[in-house]
Image: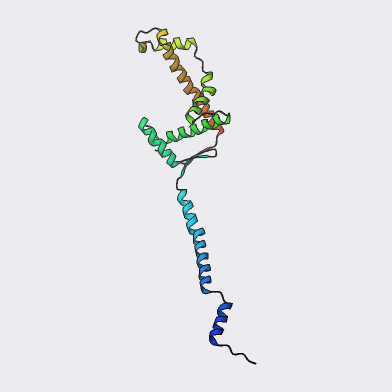
Length: 191
């Protein structure tokens, strides 16, 4: 016996065998959204986070242009004749000294105290001013002391000579450390 199937029944059967249009539309929309997310939105957010250039590398540490600009602006208030390259060199020296202080396992609550401890241990501890140096400096600059005796200005002279030697020894120490470090300056030299 032949069974009679109505057109509406056939249409219902064919809809049951093929995926629902809503399901297909949802799948296509989801695929489109995921494609847009991974190829357009994600790279765009990553590139907006990395918008600062590197001014210099010190071994594996970078100094960004924005960090340099902030340090330069701060330094200009104190030293109006300073150049951006001088500030960058100072930042490089600071990174090297802090790295060395941490390398010998010094510890301090902040970077300034860490640097002072390092300089005291590595440089200041080895500075000795001889009596002959004090006398010689006094004699060469006697007019600056307005007829005061050597004993009256001894501490002042000694402090000055210690700071002078500290600066000389620090400069030499930094130059030695810089020779061992990998420093790459990305910033163009100023005219």
